[in-house]
Image 1 (cartoon, one colour):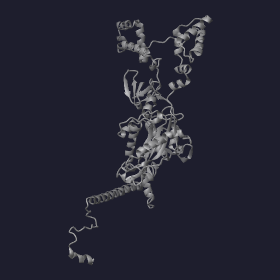
Image 2: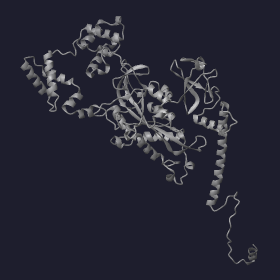
Image 3: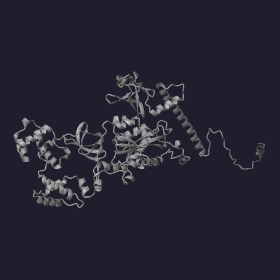
Image 4: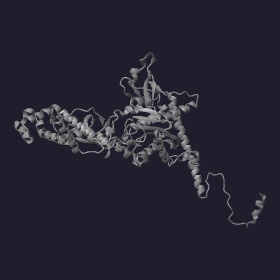
Length: 616
């Protein structure tokens, strides 16, 4: 997996830059190799570039001392570069040469190098043709290698000086030239640090020092290595956006990173769990969330993003034969069933659901875990949250509470801090860098949405009795299947279930998605849930045929009925409240037909009325 690491060439605003430093998971420092200007940018704004040669040197591999020297050379010749060759005086070139203790010919060579490469690194001192090659006799090299292997790389951990003594003694016994101490030290410095620690200390210490931190799940050693996805009903009654009327429970799908315990993405839906909610949750997990947080009015950090290596699902059948199977293959994601009988393959997401459920059950309108626990609590009447409001509440809890709280499963470190340790590194472990930015976020989002295959007719395309059309479909009208000319060709159309006022046509030649709106642009925006409700409404009336006009007429009628019912309910609640208010003060409502029996206040002495009572 490619990653953003210091030294990597990147593209920002269509220009090539060098990534200097990862200052935080949401902030990196880049430098323009041409101008030397540095900028702080979000990693989501970058994309990896193919490394280019700065002369014959890797720019970020140049030692600071050599870079300072070459920069001073460039600063010295900069005034000469600003003028054309015929305007440069020999005196000016000589003055620069004297400042560096060089001759004028050297300065002219520097100018020529710059004009060929236009990069500062071309002014570096050229390496020797035999640079990196040993000038020692092969017999001496053999002695040094043998003593390093048998003496220096030992648990007793001898010093380099002691190693040189052994090398010198062996060379004298063979009557060959003795290398000096600095030569032996350079040979030791070339040995990999991990090998030195493994041989001189232990392989365990080398592994703990030079390998990334490990999670408890096999393979979940770094962020994005293994994700788990699961669904659960929400123990909460939701209300609709318009009338704030109870519409039942929703479903929550979450994606969690097994290594860091970060919640990578989620989806709240009114539909039962399936490929739809799984696709939306995975797309949310993969894409950067800066824009999403801003759209939901959340001032929080949610840095985890990127394409995971593997996703464990409790029921991977929902991925088979759906857009998820195709999308997984498109982006190289391995999707597997969680092994039965091995709780460590699903414990992370299940424990997270328990944490979330306990917090959700404190909200008004909760259904609790079961009927016995709910008791006489009226969940429907106390419901207050819409689906979008719950989504915002849930994201706030994740980013500002769950991610910030110490987690026992990762050494009592908050998940977001644990993630940052992997990315930025610690005192004892190197950082792994940031995930490679997604090049086409729009395409990825559509790739994980539900799709249908339809033929294209002269009137466009029909999906669930709704007509769509755009000119981009014109060339594909009545197209034939390239593999069977007797059949009409089917094309892929993706759609966002939250807004089906347009679908997205995947052009088979350009591999680009194009928006296809309603054929009748006066139709209102609706969701797939509105559509399903309208179709259900129509099935209850056999005399109505499910065509597009009937569907939208049905939606309008349903809205009118809802508004009338809401108004009647509001009046009934007002009347009931007035009655309660009169009762609370010992009075009666003027509309009440039952009169209270008033006790006489004058006592029992009034005898004339006795006959009346007896007559009764």
